[in-house]
Amino acid sequence: MIKTTIPFGPQHPVLPEPLHLKLVMEDEKIVEAIPAIGYVHRGLEKLAEVKDFHQNVFLVERICGICSVQHAMAYVQGIETMMNIEIPDRAKYLRVIWAELHRIHSHLLWLGLFADAFGFEALFMQCWRDREKVMDIMEATSGARVVVSVNVVGGTKRDISSEHLAEIIRVVDQVKEDMKNMENAFLNDYTVKHRTVGVGHLTKEQAYSLGAVGPMARASGVAQDLRTLGYAAYNDLCFDMVVETAGDCWARTAVRLKEVYECVRLIKAAIDKLPKGDFAVPVKGNPTGEVISRVEQPRGEVLYYIKGNGTKNLDRLRVRTPTFANIPTLLVMLPGSQLADVPVLLLTIDPCISCTER
Amino acid sequence: MIENIAEITKDQLLGETQKMSGQNYRFVTTSCVDLGDGNLDVLYHFDKDAKLQNLRIKAKRGEEVPSISKIYLCAVLVENEMKELFGLNVTGMAIDYGGHMLLTPEALKNPQSKITIEQRGEK
Image 1 (cartoon, chains in turn purple, orange):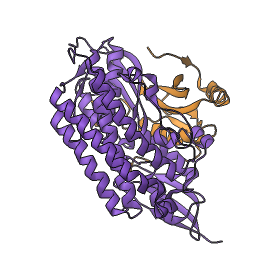
Image 2 (cartoon, chains in turn cyan, orange):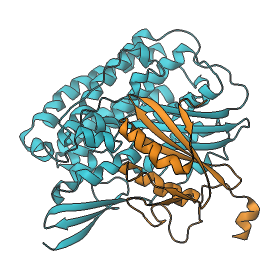
Image 3 (cartoon, helix red, strand yellow):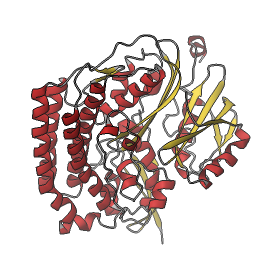
Image 4 (tube, one colour):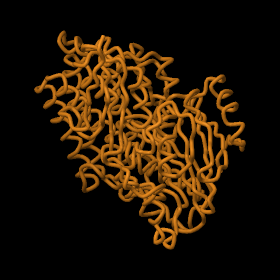
């Protein structure tokens, strides 16, 4: 059969950011797919070498707005390890609260985009309506909706008042109730299942050998979530990992959807156990040595390699983001799929190109 | 400060990586560090049960280093990235973007390497 090559992206209605796929087709079936990036690379790792290590917190938050809290967490935890800084317990819990709020709004963003990709506009709006409620909390507690800049080396920049904590509980309970109503549409609707069940299948072995992370890996049965390491306050909150085994687009949707419930539980547990006291300690000196810091972002594991030289500037800041790790899975998921399934399949890796092209 | 790190030579890289694969380690990524004297530190990070194991090789800029993408296909993106941004000459990559995965033809070569103002002026 004659093979044709179809370019998919970098500009496509389903892609909020530029990613290009070269799809080699036989009729409507994909036989080979080569991903291409490089449209918006910003060189932020290089910029980090000329900024003060305190300023880098704000820099890494701008790698990706949607997971900015987790980027900052990974960075400040790495610096704190290098400088032997023990942060107050309250700061650890506050970091978890903001991180899990970020995970909720990231997953709701993705669920909305995913609904939009398979043409369910009402579901898209429901998801984003709930996301707005979480963004309002962000604004109330930090002054910003997306890049909240609450993490600093030594703790957090601000506290959360008891009034705001009560409001957070009220809103996340409401989000949980709304998610229960939407769950049926995402996971059991006849038409939606036709677009997701069996599409983009990735086995457990493939997910592991291709280095998949986050919901991508967990939807294929790989029980891997760095929150089990117990960083920040996760050790005290009995974190429960969400794992599915089907390995298709349906399973990846199910993992993200069910993680919203776990986020709500973690936030409420963190508020319940929130210790009293300071939320930051003074920081003296400069970082020296090498450290690797990892945290679980909404899209999966992020790795920071940091090398300090005893001055205010770092020798090297290396960031491996989750989408960078998940792109290779497209090399095995796309071949064999139909062209019409590409938008839905591609979205299920939750591609964040601003992370990938940091 | 990094735990579980083994210093190896570039000739040992494929053998050690094969051992990692045999022990069911997942490839995480690599970190390339310009030491400022024309030498590069390359760290290969692997993970099993959320525990990291690291390999470190040293290489000169432009020196040939074998690709591990035949063992771990997922290494292909980061190897292309190191080749373009640091000038590490990774050979035998499963997919070779020819130096243009991230950079356009007119872009500064190896933009993430340490370069003095004098060197930049000469370019």
